[in-house]
Length: 369
Ligand SMILES: Cc1ncc(COP(=O)(O)O)c(C=O)c1O
Image (cartoon, rainbow, N blue to C red; front, side):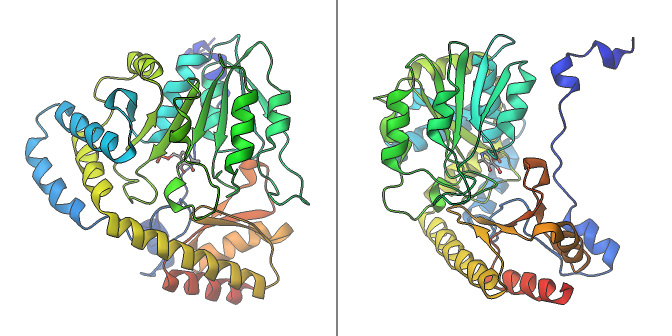
């Protein structure tokens, strides 16, 4: 028996997350200088211009542990979101918080429920804890949310071993969303001892009537954990910072498993600054709405179907060509995301870029066919 074999079976069976090729590497391979990456749902505008100054100031304090920066970020989040500091759990990205939640509730005797095509980290953290995943079949093709979460099917999988439910709203990679009434009916029906994560990584992008702000439900459902991130509309993906909001009781629990200082000074200070730059957030939201429409129009003109999306990406059906289209785009300096690992081999996920980047995408696509 090797030392590898001594590792936990559930860890040995995991597949590591693959981030894809860096833009610089593709440019080097192709000998070009204008490659674009529309693969990781990043903000094409970058981040608030105010963040640079803060990073330069904080760089002079990096000999210190980051507790002061964590304190001020929590204080600002609490003011802005209308919650208390003792409800906030900081994470090194919201993935870190998802992992903390899983480790707090799941072991080899537990089950976690989530939807087919849901964000892949739910599967990863469930398996890493040795828990059983119960995956509910997604909504059918002929529904208004094709590939979306089927909350009734999810509820049907809840049993006396269920400890945790994951819901992404909107979901990645499908872009589907759940409206207030249906999600609240689900929370009402879920037994109160089962923890439920509503992952709102794309919340700030959503522009839909009756879309829920789950923070408003925290008092009513003490089993609710809402996760959000600074990686998307705030444009801080490279710094790694996200958070959960829950009851103070659950927050205290997560703080027991959380590594002390799991958010670094630069990320914490940048997040506080980014949170206050309403103009940048508004600009990002608006460019995303325009970009989504530009993408939708472009694919409709080319006779291609896509999954309706409330996020900053569109998942498009290329059928059996999807592998060739991915490769063809790559060869023309456009990186998009295959989603075969989600069980969607006919689709490619394309993040919303700037108008110029989207034109570049369509020019590359037209050059392939
Ligand atoms: C639905 C969803 N949740 C959470 C995350 C995690 O983001 P981060 O760890 O960068 O905060 C992502 C990132 O793509 C996501 O799509």
